[in-house]
Amino acid sequence: MSPSSAKRLITLEEFIIQGQNRFRGATGELSQLLRDIGLASKIISREVNKAGITNILGLAGSQNVQGETVKKLDIFSNDQMLHAFARSGIVSMVISEENEEIIRMQSSSGKYVVFMDPLDGSSNIDVNVAIGTIFSVFMRKSDSEDYPVDEDALQPGINQVAAGYVLYGSSTIMVYTTGIGVNGFTLDPSIGEFFLSHPDIKIPEFGSFYSINEGNYNGWSPGLKKFIEYCKEKDEATKRPFTSRYIGSMVADVQRTLLKGGIFIYPESIAKPKGKLRLMYECNPMAFLVEQAGGMAVDKHGNRLLEREVTNIHERSEIYMGSRDNVQLCADYMKRYRKTVSSGTKAFEPAEV
Ligand code: P6P
View 1 (cartoon, rainbow, N blue to C red):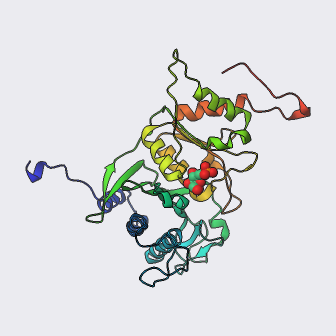
View 2: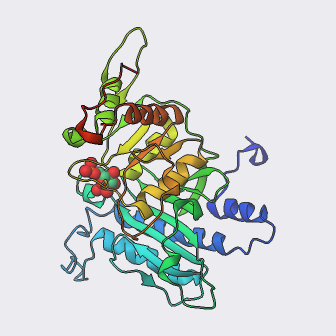
């Protein structure tokens, strides 16, 4: 095959520049931020993939074989991402799963506020399960001449200007959106480049996977129990095709849901009335991605999750997300089987859906 006819792969940098050129007046700052996130994730990927060897799994503060102070991978990842945001000079505040307080950057005039989970699912790394970095980017609302204020961080998910994740799995892939579709880039570690491998990701309208931790079944709402029971019924006539898949690492479960379809649920429950996952740096970025890919993400009432008002930067939320048909069916079950709470009347038990 002559070089000219070989399919040339597009790098992340080239794609970002092309995307930026489509926005007249684009300053290139968001492009720079995405490139910096890409660089940080390459460094994290390198450490994640050799973690077992370099004793980096040790507890923070322990010494490794080189006598260096060992940082746990999630602390190491947090540091790498913070360096990237500091280097960009365009981020004024960072809210991280690893830090209770808002991190105010040197570049106080930076126009962006970034939320991140630097290494989500890190408890899985000891057993080599895929883990990931999740990020969500907002424009600050306050005047960039002034110091940023807390209200800059308390914005609903619909205000995100970019969101994405990096999945450190059998390969390392970065998937992100800036509001004009979703694209995935796979890292070639031999040359340290991300190449466009999943252009314009569209989630199937229906998928056969349902993804939820069934160990929490007893704490679920009646409607959710009915929906999952429906998914379990094997009915030859309707050839119900459902299969359960739950990895327990959100980025991996969302990656499969985006590419194969189906529904991912981390619900509210008796033990966790607000759910377990964090709204601002787990649920919102994933909801933005799935909507941009043609799917949907709702709360326990079936309302659009991205419109959820925010009161606390670390607040938790339930999430029901994935293929439109699957999520809508689940929301219908939740609505029809919601317990009537008025005057102690018996729980509403309508006919089967
Ligand atoms: P559970 C990982 O700890 C995590 O934060 C997400 O990545 C994942 O979806 C969820 O928690 C798994 O939680 O309760 O099912 O183990």
